[in-house]
Image (cartoon, rainbow, N blue to C red; front, side, top):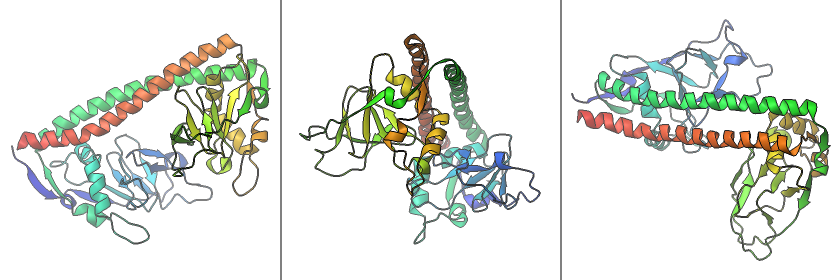
Amino acid sequence: MKLTKYKLGELIEQCDERNSDLRYGLEEVKGISIQKIFIETKADMSGVSLSPYKLVKHDDFAYVTVTSRNGEKITLAHNNTENTYIVSSSYVVFRVLKPEFLSSNYLFMYFNRPEFDRYSRFNSWGSARETFSWEDLCDIDIELPPLPVQQKYVAIYKAMIANQQSYERGLDDLKLSIDALLDKFKHSSSKMPVKDILEEIDVRNSENSITEVSGVNITKQFMPSVASSDDLHSYKIVSNKQFVYSGMQTGRDKCIRIALLNDDKPRIVSPAYNVLQVKNDDVLPEYIQMWFSRSEMDRIGWFMSDSSIRSNLDLPRFYEIKVPVPSKPEQEAIVDIYSAYTTRRDINERLKAQIKNICPILIKGSLEECE
C-alpha cells in the first residue's frame, strides 16, 4: 500500500442547488459553529426569502469563507444525516467528487484537526475581512491512503461518535425529567418574588488578596474575565454558594446573566455585577440557579427589560420575578437529579472534545500505516 498525492480540487466539487421552489422552510435553516457542526441559525429570519438559500444534502459539506474574528478556526461542517438543510447563499457548499478515492468521512476527519484550522487561517487573505476561498481550499495538497485504509480509520471514528451520541440521548431523557418536575412545581407550589429569596452582599477585595477575576457568560457559567487592571481593590468577592448577577444587555442576549459559584475558592467580579445569596435555609441556591437556567425565565427577563439602548434588567426589576418554591425535600430531590445531569453533561462535553482530539491521531495513523 502506498500514499497517493492529489490537489484537493481534483476530488471535490462545488454544489449550488437553491431552494427556489421553497420546498424547505425555517426548520431546515442552519448555521455552522466553530465546533464544525450544524446549528440552529441565530439570524433574524423575519421577512427573509428562503429561495436563494443553498441546499446541503446528505454527505455534503458547507463552510464559511470568512476566518477573521472566528476563534482562529474555520467554520465548516459535514452533513452526515439523512436530512437536507439549507444555508445562506454566502456559504460554500461542496461534496466529494470521486468517492472511489476519498471517503467524505475521512475528509471531515482531515478538516476536523487543529492543523487544518491553522492552515486555513495562515492562508486567509483580505484587509477588512480575511477569507479562505474556494480556490485556496482546492489548492491544498493532500496525501491519501487507499480507500480501505481510510474506511478502517473512519470506522473507529464513527464508533466513538455512536457511543457519544448514545450517551447524549440518555442525557436528553434526564433533562426532560427535570423539566417535567419543574413544570409540576410551577403549578403546585407557591410563588415567591426574588426579593424574598435573595439578598445582595457587597464584600470588596480591599486588600487585593484575590487576583482571579471572573465574568458571567450567556450560558450562566463563570468565565475568565478580560480585566487587566492591577488595582482590584474595588472588585467584589464571590464566595461559595453565592450568585453573581448582571442586568446589563439582557435584552440583547435575551438571557438573564446569573451564575452560582460551587467552589470553595472565592473569586472576584467587576463592581458592576451584583453578588447575591439566599436569605434562609429553606431555599437551596442550587434550586434557584436551576430555575433561572430555564429558557422560560430568560423570556421573562427579556420581556421585563427596559427599552433603553442596552435593554437592562436592573436589580429592582429582577427582584420582581416570581419563582415557585416547593418544600425543601422536593428541592433536594430535584437538585440531586440536576447534579447528576450536570455531571453527565460535563462528561459528554469531554467525550466530544476527546473525539475531536483523536482526529489528528487517526489521520496520522492511516498515513503511517501506508508508509
